[in-house]
Length: 291
Image (cartoon, rainbow, N blue to C red; front, side, top):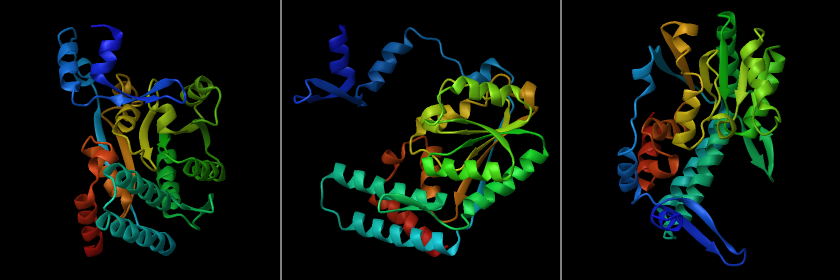
């Protein structure tokens, strides 16, 4: 099979005549089972747990009660979302794109900010930030290191300010940092550097953050691959040697909110775009109303 034949069979491209090239849109999912079957004939696969003596991976969910302002914004926007999906007769792609845009805004609200005329406006006394403060106090008292994953730029800005306020030394991996290797070395080798603050889109692959016993997801990416890869940054063959019988993942989840929908999609090993539809959203809406 030639390279061009491979692309035609297993990839989606969109031709852009005004630019003179074709843009890669992703794999042809219908052909993926056949591709994996062809690859499997030449591979030997084994899980990391079968290669090393791994510690138990503990998942914990910190339910955060939204304050009155956060709940008001979230309720209004979720009502608007349900009205939209229930009255839509537009193209499926347009519905999905608009729905994901509204879910992004809902996630921003639970993270502690909203956008007004294109500018981020922070919600006073963000519930998640205050919960994070308490969690960090406990971890620092244990003299342990922790990774904080935050999806939004504004979330990372708020967390950065919190860490400075608490006088916690930290490293950072996102688009604001030029030398990621220096930041990783700082987190790994400096005993006073307790936290590394990361973006999943920048730091989810290829880094060894095994000095951390704890990982906190302040807010999640909508992509399952980001979640899977980011978990592997600290759950390595060194984990048991460094931390004993277990390592801990903490998900910060605003009560009765979009956070639960996102977390359920990732637990189900799906991107949010694959997980949601009108029925799913209506089911969550009814559930949140009952509770």
